[in-house]
Length: 254
Image 1: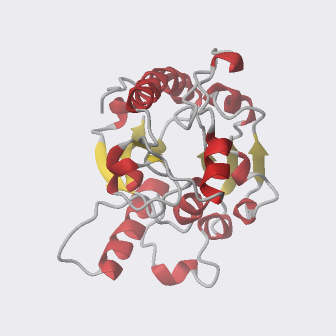
Image 2: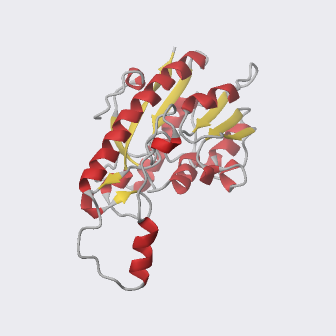
Image 3: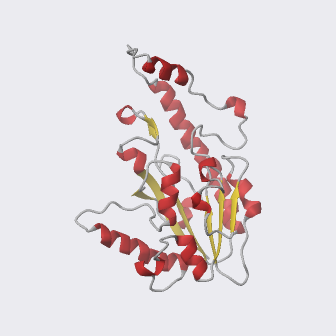
């Protein structure tokens, strides 16, 4: 919300939603089960939420009357879409999603980019069938630590120095006499993440120009990120609402 992206917001309002997982790999597996970030509704059965989310795919993918039973037994969106004649592709930037992992199953094309922080490098790999509808997953990591825009030399990336030394001291049972976090440093990292979203937003503008008309686009995140809230930094083995809070925008490109 602090970055206020101009291009992404043209799809529709930015919603606050909640990821099903707190780090990259399991979150993407959930996405491909059809479990996009949820609205965390109260006074409702979980089964009702799953049904409503699956019904949303009827609109996103122009497939009338999707039923939970239709995805059985695989419970895997790429497999289900291929059975309906879809061409499926994924272009990912994070190594934990590399083509050797189970997540790559049932994609007609699966590509791992050479760099994690440049959405534009995904564009040459985009492929759309003239005869078949296309489903495409794109993963890009600019807003992941170290929150680096594509044009920033790696030598200028921030480093969390002394991390391994901290682990060695913990193994020896040493007690820390001062706070683990430098909150001024965390604030700098937080500002980097906000700024880098500008680069992503500009790249999204180019992406929109490359997509066919009547393409439904969903933009979200796999997890949140912490910058000192509750004594946490980053994401992963953390139980905090901020590590699950994600933005969610979607709409049709005409």
